[in-house]
Every structure is written in structure tokens, then in C-alpha cells.
Image 1 (cartoon, one colour):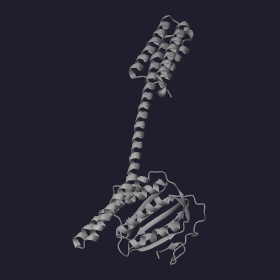
Image 2: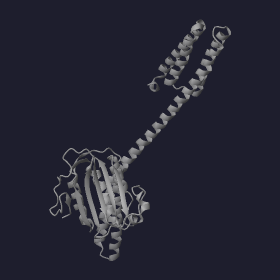
Image 3: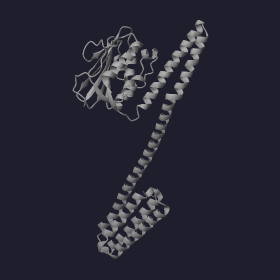
Image 4: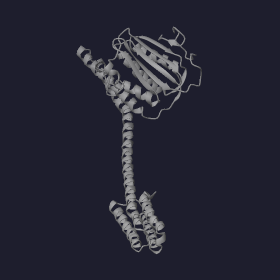
Length: 367
């Protein structure tokens, strides 16, 4: 590349161009009947040299002035001698204008390249900062939170007065929120990294998901899936589903229904999480997946507004989409649509080992 060439090599190229230009100017003078060819060689050569070696503006304008004057004087002299027509001399300002347009384009491209390099450097710095944050969030921060929680537990166990117990419970609750927020921020940062897919039995995955969440909240849990094995990243899908179920728990009360189901639709598999909770106002539905969104009720229950942002980021990283429909006082349904190449079996045949009290083929409830 010319940008990495040595100063000596650059001087040789420029010296060669000067010699080439002088030879063509001499040819224009000696052979006026064929001046068009050496004339254009002079202009083509200066354009080529400028294209591979961006001169400073002052040097470029000086070279342009020398070439314009030298070719212009030669052609005007030949015109006065009657060797060429005067209208042919118009090529000189036209070629100078073309060269200036080329200079404008080249310098604009160089500015764009400089800006791209600056943006790339900022992106590398951002990636390094993100990686550092992920490492801190997944280790140092959580380690400190765990240590703090342990000491609070010791303090609470060493004192039997009610006020100390209340204060310790508040601190533990805040540490739990901080730990959850740290985990979500770490997950959100990691979603920008490449996705590694592996076979996952979605039916078994969803059944275990419901069984894991059942002791957390007293709800009417239901599940239904006949998708079978898919290519997915289990960790990211689990992060998205945990966020959806945690959101459903936050907006429902004891005895409300939470229903998880999955099915195939052509080249996609869809997962739906619906609840019979309080629902979402129409004005909030459009912005519910934004990272900055958090309803008042979600804030009151310790919501950070990152859970649904994790859902959307995880699904879109897989080439899919997330949508929501809701009615106030009726409930909310979130739907994940993820592209898939099904190879293992035809739709409608259940391969998941379902719970013993499953009500129907492909449906399951927690034991």
C-alpha cells in the first residue's frame, strides 16, 4: 500500500511522474498534429499519482497550476501558429475542472475513511469496556454482594431484637435486587456476542421451566408444547423465558393463571406466555420492550425495566421477533417467533417426557 511506502519510494514515484510529464509536454511541442495523445497522458498521469499519493492541498494546487499553464501555453501557441483550432484549447480548463472534481471526491473518501477508523476505534473501545463490565458483573460484583449478604445474615442471627431483624431484612432485600439487576445487565451485555446453537428439546425445556418456577409463586401454572427438538442457545432462551415469567408473576396475584405454550408454524417455532393478570395500558404496549421502560407497578415490585429488553435482544439475535397483546383487567400475552429448520420429525408428535398428571398429549402441569 502507498500509505506504508518509504519516503524514498514516494520520491522515486514523484520523480518518475515529473519526467513522464516533461516527455509528453515535449511531444506536444514537437508533434503538434498528434498533441491530443501526450496531452491526455499528462492529465491521466497526474490523476493516477494523486490517487495513490494524496498531496497536501498546497502541493496539489501548485502541481495543478503547473500542468494547466504548461499544457495551456503549448496549445495556445499551436493555435496562434495555426497548427490546431482555437476551440481545442478549451480542453485545458475542462481537464482542470475534471481533476478538481476528482480531488474533491478523493479527499471526501479520505475523510470518510478517517471517520470510519475513528468509529471502529470507538467500537473496539466499547467492546473492551463491555467485556470488562461483563467480567466485573459476573464475578467481582456478585462476589461482593454474596459476602455482604453473608455478613447481614450473621448480624441478624446474632441479634434477636425485632428492629435488627427488620433492618437486616431490608438490607437483604436490597442486596437481592442488586444481584438481580447485576445479572440482568450482564446478560444484556452478553447478548451482543455471537450465538452458538445446539439441539434443544423445547418440550422438556418448557416443562422444566414451569416446574422450576412453580414454588416461587402461587399461580395456576399450565404448559403445552409439541415442538420437539430445535436448534437454540439454551442459556439465552432461558434468560428470555425467565424474564417473561418473572414479568407475568409481577403482574398477577395469587390464583391467577400463567400459561406457557409452544407450537410450530411453517419455518418458525413460537412460544407464548400468557397470564390473567391486570394487563397493560394501551399507551404502554408500544414501548414495553424498550430498555428505559418500566411501569409504576413494575417499579413498585423492584422491576428494573431490563427484563423485557433482554427478551427482545435475545430473540432478535436469533433472527426472530417478540410481540405483545394485552387488555387492562383481562391479561397479557407475549409471543416469541423464532426461525428454525426442522429436521427431526413432523409436527404434532410429542417427544418430551411429560409429567404424570398431564391432562392431554403435549400438555403438562407441575407435579
